[in-house]
Length: 307
Ligand SMILES: [Fe+2]
Image (cartoon, rainbow, N blue to C red):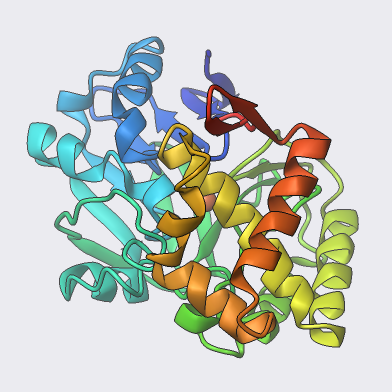
């Protein structure tokens, strides 16, 4: 995988779904925007080295939010380089107070390490990535500390997990609170009408057509408001696939029992599907197998989605 130079010396790396996409500014004092998922750190390091950046020299990491697939390399890179780490003031608060619930790590049983967050920013601040100035736009909903970064002159938007082209990042009511759908609607409203020629999302390929993507996302959220079980369905499907990626597959016999030990699986089904744990699980897995999203081999189940 090679980086794509989106502005002079600023490279975009498209990863899969276990790892968030990330950016590297190449310089004597490199700057990273997000650092992917912890378990794949060696891959992250290798692909960053290919554009000539040594992680031991990193000066600053900027995070778009505190989720595990965006901060996974933070601790190791900070230990090696002594770099600063900057994020939205709410994310900094979660990290400062060692709150592994607000970060989703414990709720979804994800691998991640705390680090030292040295700088906080808020809505409207500017961030300099070398000569490239980005404006911080605060966009909660998916994550309480979510931001997007907007480069006005180049008309580039780093939309992280606030806006994807075809799909939408998971919403987690029991961590973010029941107003999360409304928060995300307000956040999307703030993006509408920005002058943008290219959007680099947190997952998936770059795309154009900001307003079309916003409209699509708004329609989906309106669907969520009409029928809450759609949120539950999307959340269960996304996190089951994510769990299969994190665990590199699971024993078919014991996977359901494992899910029953996690806070998120039980709570989501309690909230939307009247405690029908097994029925819901069987229904989702059957659909995944039929569509080829999950494959079965020698008593194990795997996802075909790229990590
Ligand atoms: Fe993400």
